Length: 222
Image (tube, rainbow, N blue to C red; front, side, top):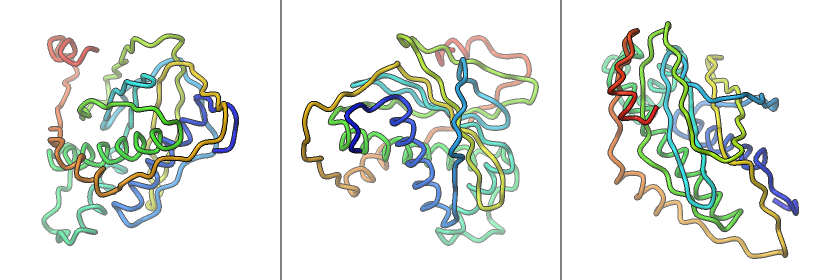
């Protein structure tokens, strides 16, 4: 980045690039995103599978990816088959635990790539928590409250090779990074990032019934 001021939308572009890069590499099929960004008032978990992760450090924020059943299955199956798993051994329902675990693993890789890029481009460090996967009933929409100062929220549409859509939402503090002078960017060791991601336990998929379990929501801080 050569701009003197790096805004929320520039950071969003870095995140979109990480989503596309990681999923394209994992599935060995193109995953693209819309050049048009939607400003939204709040981030939400939406059907059929919602995955969210919080981060803090140099700046704080929340990343949500809402998968349709079709997009979740396509990404899961393409990823597994790219690793040599026979199609006959793969789950056929998006509610299967294997699908949630796989998407959680990919979410870890996405945020890991994003935090690495942030460290390289902005010379700040951010830390992520454990991604949470929720298989959501169609009648349920859950809003996640974030304690952010002057929060800004954005929504971006993604498309798989099979033309299935999913959506990524970002909420973060309104912030700007102002470059005072040119600097040498830090080199990122991809092997180190992969090793760190492998140490993170894969998240288990959880189902939320139509009648929400308030104890579960309290535990998640929702």
